[in-house]
Image (cartoon, rainbow, N blue to C red; front, side, top):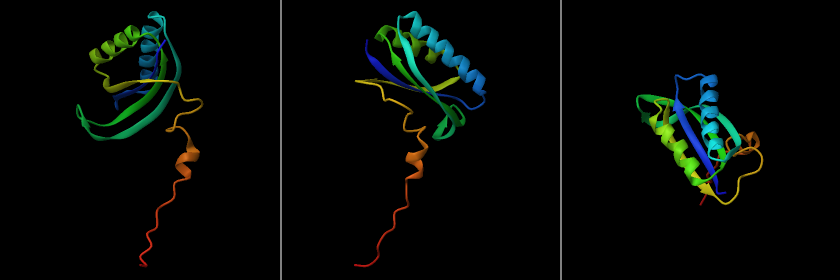
Length: 121
């Protein structure tokens, strides 16, 4: 079966338990279509670049999906109907990333150093 990475943005007014419920509902849809969600990561409440439906922040969630295209299409259809979902994107990938995603790896964020420009010419 094809592999997908799916990122979901939900309204800022929702609680984390409501986000978990929504992910479980989506998981049930995928499993009904003979697929499975291999990994689900909650990235937290983060600011977004521009207002979406009067929201300045959104709850971000990543899901790694192993399912048939029909199951993913049904999941996306259900998300379009939901008022809690602001945006989503599903990308087909060749293989899933092992371990935590780049957003969850603290060491990557700590290694960033400010750039110093040398003004000597």
